[in-house]
Image 1 (cartoon, rainbow, N blue to C red):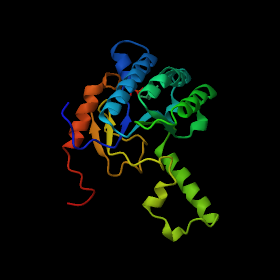
Image 2: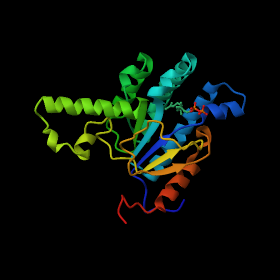
Image 3: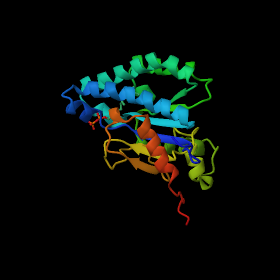
Length: 236
Ligand code: FPP
């Protein structure tokens, strides 16, 4: 791929279409999620190679808890296995793992693996891989408002000083820059409660490809598309 002047610093992905991928093959949905976990690996590799700084993946939404128990169990099992199996590779690729969301909602198995993987990769300074788990943007904003109110009540914040920059520091994403590029697979034209505050100026890239089919080339295509856009942030 040609060298790009404009590599997005932060890419966020809504990984959609695992179920349809499985259905097309007459496979159980969990097989679609398993194939989806493999596609996660490809996205990590492509972002590392392109020297993207941050990759945020919508791995499990607040709403996903409403899926049938068996599917939730399969997704949690996959997450735990993924973290167990892939930590050495994350290490080797200098990837630093982090997570956002109401993490304490997670069952103890995946939660423990998550903490282990975060701890093991803490010193890495390559790609920052951020998993959104039990994540919902409205919930994040509510948690942010509660945090702001605590700061005001404690006398640490003058309400008149509150502005977007300060509010950003009360969100789960306070350590990260806003995404430059938001990718959604499977052709749906929705944001689905993902990073509502942070994507205000993100470029959107929506592809019909189902997530398990989304490969390195597709990620390169999205980045090329992004590089050719003119970001004006409301200016001219
Ligand atoms: C959407 O497919 C995908 C999810 C519910 C979450 C994404 C999960 C993975 C990629 C697998 C596990 C992830 C990790 C990090 C190990 P869908 O089931 O909504 O698909 P559909 O809309 O076609 O039914």
